[in-house]
Length: 161
Image 1: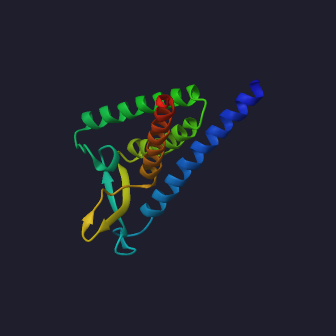
Image 2: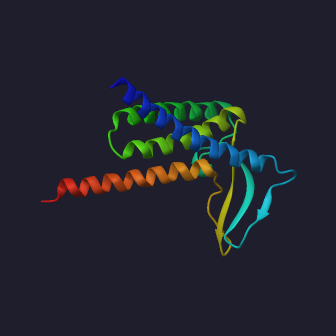
Image 3: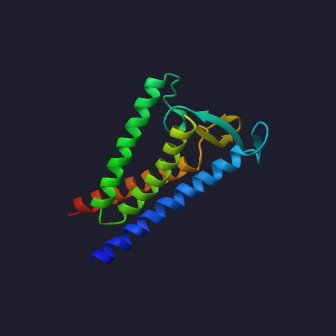
């Protein structure tokens, strides 16, 4: 039984490390491009480096260190809650929490190391731009959307007569 739990924990840790590594490698690549990062890919996608001091997608950006530190502490607490949910979940939701945690740890690393998160993926259509984001944000968003679908499916099953 202990061997099975250790194997499960190692697999979960590996998933988090893979997601964290993909995020870190993408950010290292963008940050190592010399000069200003403003790369046009096509009419829908470009890479433009922006430093985010807020939360996801640049929301609630603050210059005050007290507010920034409070948000960072809040993110740490949320990550601890996600770790608790990972151990508590016994179904597919575990993997979605792992995906969210891997992305969140990627952004948390940047908040601590750079005092800001490098965002660089710019989606636009006919001059209308979405928030600039990064690979960690993609993982976080994907995990949350999957959790919503699972909860909706579980709700529907529970209410079927």
